[in-house]
Picture 1: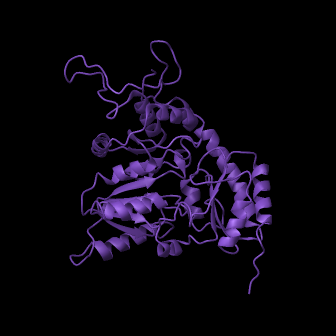
Picture 2 (picture 1 turned 90 degrees about the vertical axis):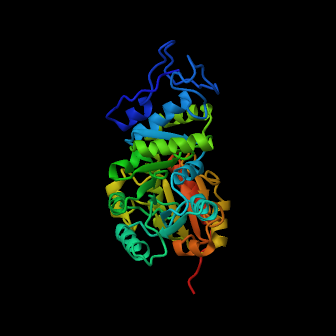
Picture 3 (picture 1 turned 180 degrees about the vertical axis):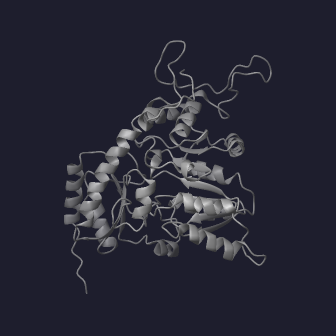
Length: 409
């Protein structure tokens, strides 16, 4: 197979295509091989050529791990069987009783894991705090001082700060540098879920993050045919702890899936540019539509965190969330009449997807918390694909024509 290398390139697209890969030294293949072996020959007991057992390390997986680390300007990468497995593995470097502070708006599966597994099974403590917007760092500082810093506090000081930016589904944006500065005052590990933005748009390691995670399933793979996750870091100590968890839990991806993601990443820069180009046009169209109450898109001037998004993200990305005028009935009418868009969970693929967060991806979030976050029955999330934008707009226009006009009482 081609050998994993650490050669660096100036351009993001060049890195996406070439990083961590060289032609096979034996027969010259330009793509990494799919190494299916589960075990590897040793020259003497304990003397091997870097691989012992495929759960611990696999040549195809190593190429992918180094490739994603290069894209995020990180030194180390570790791949997992899913984004949720990456989340569980990252939190597993903590101990029972440790405190995680998470941004309040997170992927429903992350919220479920924190509340149902991290707290109830692993005995950790989890707090949800508004970390988005210009007050995010101040909110973190205030929460720690009031809830964690005194002898009478009910919570220990946080060991980990968990950030999504933009968040799922409300697309809140976080000042990563400011929040990281506060977190590091308390020696907390900063984790940034960069799934929505991708390293094409922002590289949290450059802004103070200690760990960056992705659901590779989404934009990095980009073709709705692989489930996988990853964590990257610059800390050797964190890498060692994550590698121990990776090997111990064994939630690792198959070599074929790793190969598929390597192939998908080669077009990441081209895809992300087109996702964003289409999404901005769609966001502007929706914002002008009389049946739309509000549109959330990071690079719309109306977005509450627009200035943060403009400073941290190269583009606004491919995700749009909006509120229809009306309720569940209007949402169903819209979603049931889409033809080009597929009504499905997940996101970040070449095809356009639509979903209803309150019923689908965020149904596991407690109803009261959904209401506080604004995840209402009239909230719709769109993952804008890379089809011709005129076809996307036509599909949205026809679906909106089936939504009844809601009159004000």
